[in-house]
Image 1 (cartoon, helix red, strand yellow):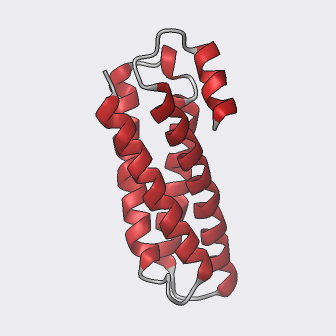
Image 2 (image 1 turned 45 degrees about the vertical axis):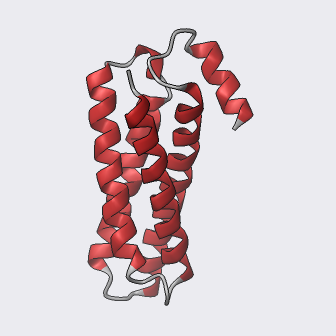
Image 3 (image 1 turned 30 degrees about the vertical axis):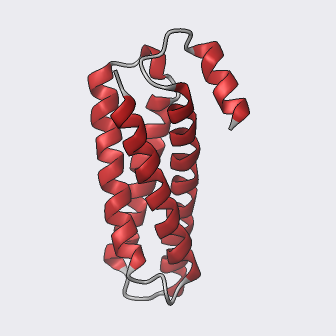
Amino acid sequence: MAETLEMLRTLAPEPTVDLSDLAAALEAVMECEQASTSCAMAMIGEGEDTAVATRRALDCADVCQATLRVLSRASSTDAMLMQALVQACIIACEGSRLECGRHAEHHEHCRLHSEAAERAATALQDLLDGMA
């Protein structure tokens, strides 16, 4: 996290967001994107009737990826766009967290994904709350 924070200080000398919150959000969203993709692939590989959960996991992974790209250039991004994307990512993470959370007792990948989605949603909400 320190490396990410230092990179952000170099790239964004006058940020409109708290750099610590931004670094935490970037790391949490990256982890969630990876967990979402892994979970979706595991569900597909298991051949279970998990179409809704698989779709939500893939949607979450895609929204996380877009959010990562925009947040990585936070100092030169339109504030309204950033806020809207952060809100969309929170929605995707929460939906995926809830859906995979229903399978968490039976599938380790769903538990890990649900936990990562919860951490990402929390970090993103902290970032959103601190945006100027």
